[in-house]
Length: 250
Image (cartoon, rainbow, N blue to C red; front, side):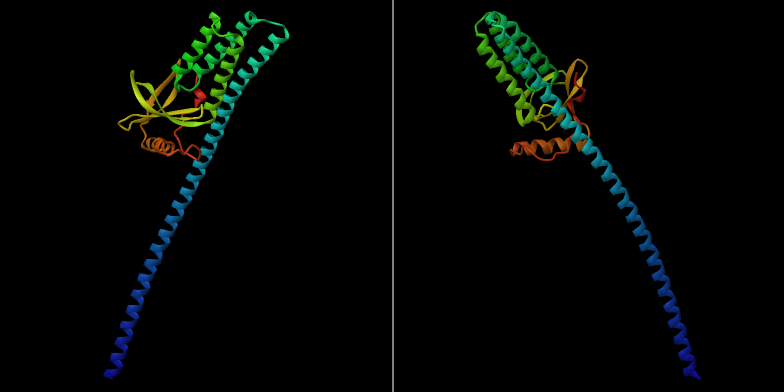
């Protein structure tokens, strides 16, 4: 009889343990299911964010390409206008006196293009055009040679629109002139870095351009990565950059 009671007690204990194990397994399954659902929701959110970011990057790349194309088309038009004017003057039998106004008009158009474009060594580029104009007006430079000089300047502008570079120039920040490293992305974006590590970009402003410090940490990191790449002579590649396109330039 005592053996039967002992067996019954053991069976009851075993049943109790099994019930507890089942409860724990059920709780574990519920917890795991909740975690899986949470991870699935997070994955969906990340996927949607990545899709949105990719669309934004594709749009920025398209805008960047359009900006480059517009810059190059403007320069190409200037070069074609210069060639057409020279050819018309030659066919008309025009002499140096008649070629002067043609060259001076083209110089003026190129000056306007430089002023409206990216503020990259603008004073130096304008000074070169001013010197050329002075030489044309004074007759110190024959029109044929002046045309070659002007054509070479336009070709340099084409080169600027196609290349990325890391150089130094003086910028005006908060009303103060400062020497800075500048990273130029073709003729559409210009970023700066000061000796203390402050970074920012050139942005279109009313009546011209201004240099503004990057406030967002992510923007600072992106600009710093661009400077690092250019310092390593990496001129081509995929870079995520703050939106500082020339699009709003005057």
